Length: 410
Image 1 (tube, rainbow, N blue to C red):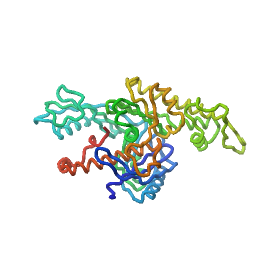
Image 2 (cartoon, helix red, strand yellow):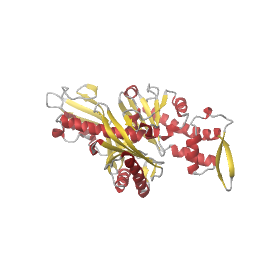
Image 3 (cartoon, helix red, strand yellow):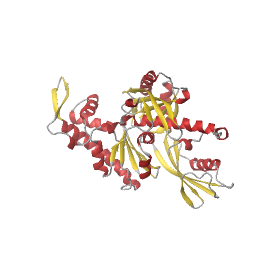
């Protein structure tokens, strides 16, 4: 096993930092990742997808990465990092190029993609992903790959995802201070989709809801392509805050109560069941109805999923997502989340578990909260396998490293 075939993923959330190391597996058609090591640090300096304390963030990265490296028995220089938050922006752009040869070649496709991405995003923004939606050759549209076709005019509709430059730089700075290099920043909902969505779901149409600690990511897929991306400023930390207020407990105790006794759908709870609350010198031993805790969680998650439904309505996909909704992320651990999602969206729903392409220490990452990290591993593995395939076919020596748009999603 060479260092080139070892990849690392870092998911910096608002409540925990997760690092996973894996060995590249599978082939270019079906990339995979064999998990070798996992590290978790519950302290993080990230709030709502943005680094608020570089020193604290650096410490959490060092702790999580060292644990993962110790378990894996290898050291990694580069890391694929997830990024999310309200600062994410998306827009579409059109590129146009003329074709002079008899048929459209790879350089023609690269040229039209470069035209589509050569737009000003603003001084405070940087391009994260450029994802071709479809190509048009003369009057024929809906083309996914125009290579080899005949035509005079080539167009592309490109989906551009950008991030705030300061947010990206502070994330890179934290990783570098921890002694590592950022191989690539990847939008978290898109990374998660690689690990939890099937090809059929992307094709039929579905919405991925990534319930994180500081923000909720939304990605809508249809016809095999990402159609809409959004980030909502409400997530698991708001649920915890409501428990703090409603039950008069500390933040740490609220998290423990949520994990041990929490339920996302109040009707599932026995109204006669009681739970013990943490005692304090001033309050003594206390109890509360478990139904009250469930009601608090239910109300906030109902509001968050309602905002997601608003995003779906805004894009015009209401009633047009046959594969339904896939809920993943830390918030998807709550029992009853599927029942609540079905009620809010009035469509099929399931919890997204990172199973696709993952092997090795599967039990260590077989939970919705690891969907982003697992997706980052698959993203990195695919890039390595595609680069090797290009070199073996001789394409690499002519075109050099593969363009970013070729490495991006779908």
